[in-house]
Image 1 (tube, rainbow, N blue to C red):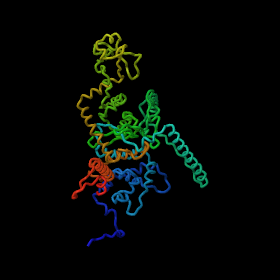
Image 2 (tube, rainbow, N blue to C red):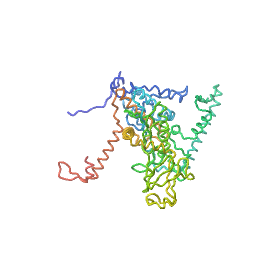
Image 3 (cartoon, rainbow, N blue to C red):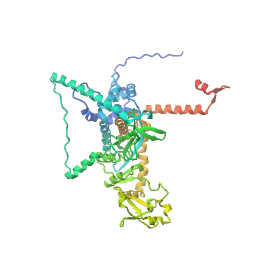
Image 4 (spheres, rainbow, N blue to C red):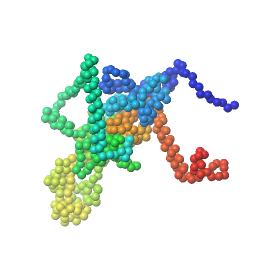
Length: 545
């Protein structure tokens, strides 16, 4: 007789999550290995002494880790997932039937904390990796990857209109806040409460070995420079070129004003660039993270990221490795002055034309002249030299009567050659290129940083940022990088497994299934039905199956 299952559920009696969650579960090991109580100290200043108790900051960061390990891209989906998973409830410390926080609370908490709390959380994970011996510190590798923004090119509007609209909104919000404060002050005075004024704490100035004049010059220099870490990767819009204007200076997205146009392999998109500084040890610990708009060149935030990495973790690397985009004179001089080898490829600007390149000319330092392939001298042309480049010129009559002129120049005034004032540093870096240490470091670069980007994009949702605005995408990138470091820390402490990324696998299955159906329907117009003598059309196949 065919049976029939009736749906009936009896109330649970004396059932505990401690019994339902397996003892060897991943989240049990994560709870035992990583104590997140340190986050309460980070966020203490963002809360007041009274009022209704908030969500525990430890619970918030545990939810961030669950989002990372499970491959979830939405707070709403995260809370639904947490309500269905007993292991997640146990990890969060919530009992059966106990209401979970609302998904909107997570957004408000992230706004309350800001980027600095997420950065301190990331750095605390790096600190634990350093204590576990996972940080080598002798080599540093830097690279960047393009990440699409959660915005469309159709949202681009003139910048002046968008900024005027945002300024108007900010003025309205500021007026509302001032009105609310003005209304609260008389009420507080009437109830006998004193209105506390915020005290401005001026940091104590540390003693230095610099003279007052040197200290003043250094302070002025630091005040004029653009600090990429402090500005959270924002573009320096005060600097503009005479013959070049950025598109983002004219047009901006109304959906995500901080995202800028980037060229991708599948076309143009709005996006960002995520920069990683990675330790050269076997664990490949991410030491620093920064997200900038796509218009920011990769070499610009390099020095700020390197110096913060060095001084924050007390490292003295012997070499820094990057690709050709990092090979600017400013970066090379700054790195070499710190007695660190700049293992970066220099851009080849001399072989862009068919004429003789600068390496065909011999420089004699004693006489400060160049010798051309025809053994003629090029002397320093001071009127046409600049602070960063020295121009050398040959005599016009030597060049006009030279049999090699067709291969050298078309000018009737003589061949000119530019020499950088930092040519000694560039020659030193060029000498590195022939050494085996440089070749090994450059081979290592491609398998040290780029797989971390691939891991973050394929498994942890960094192929496209889900949040908007620069400070929010920095929070998202810091969370992903902290999770990547945490996986290596857990492996060091005896756990090499992690929960299967169900959401990522579900998306992969849908994409694979869509590819299979497109292929099948594209190349098979009719299908032979097994066991019958007739042919089914494409639509009949879909209906049948």
